[in-house]
Length: 169
Image (tube, rainbow, N blue to C red; front, side, top):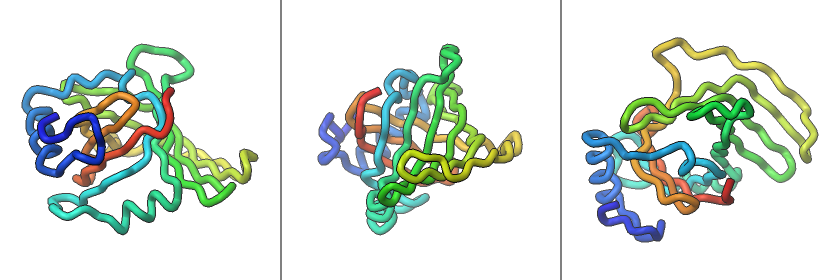
């Protein structure tokens, strides 16, 4: 990645934007296997912002926010299982559902089907979530990944996120 070698600490916004322009025009070539694992937010930028959203990043880190991506239980090619969670001590809130790659960039599309609240690994509450309207499916436009190190993507709302790997699949 231009201006962004393998070390997450040396990645610059300019390098991310340059890589994003390349991914938009030529695709990123990211495959599902490079996404597998657990990711923690490290740096965030709001839509059109040049300054990092440090307060939001610190809050998500304090809440132990995680994006977990694994192969689906059906083991269909390209099918993924996505979990987005936060936790405060033994209390964990997670959104879970299927994910899939779409297009040449590609987009990591997903649909959360269930909301779960756990305490110390015991499920306290679980409820199904409604399916989003067809043209409102959430996604991350994948920009670049250094497998088992970091991942960069832009969300449907326009924000840019740099995650670091927390553990391997």
